[in-house]
Image (cartoon, rainbow, N blue to C red):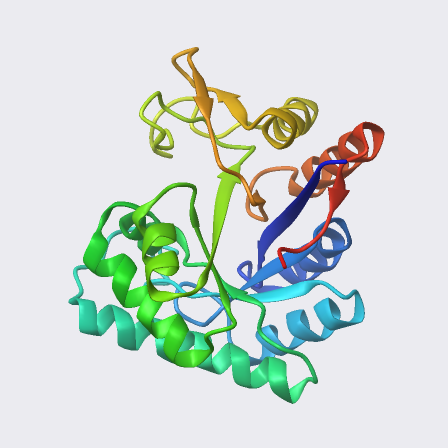
Length: 252
């Protein structure tokens, strides 16, 4: 039987509509990544997400990003390695404190947006993030783009590296994602995404936008809460997984 972690970024969309979306998505996933107040989120929202995750026995992760709400953390911000370390440690420490106060434990850390993308190719950024996670909690897993500098930095420093793939994003032949500002970057058909997710789990291979097969190491699959029809996508993925006998479980 195949097994996979299914994660989702939550606490990012403000207001009642965002809270409803969080509640609708959480039953479908095994792990959540809660916005830490940088690109989105605040203490109140983090607590609400954490409380619900604990009630559903969903693994809780921190989702730190550039402190840039205007651009939702999706634009590069020039920071030194020390500034990256301080930024990440501050954000994930806040989440860990809230999780502990609610009676749980922080399971993992996954950077957000532009910070995640920079860490995939920049050794200094990836090492700063890994060092911050290690300083907070050596038992914390660190999620990064599959086969990236971030997963390498995590393993090198003694953290559990978790390789992530995206069923709703198109890949290029070199293994990178098609940038969001280009056509066909994001898939929108829930049935198509579900079949693609199943193929990744069962074969470790995904067809790139160029039509070439790409081999991927996949420990966890991401669902983006801000993707159109995210709840339908999550439901289709879980239904497809159930039919194929794929178990959804957080990373050990």
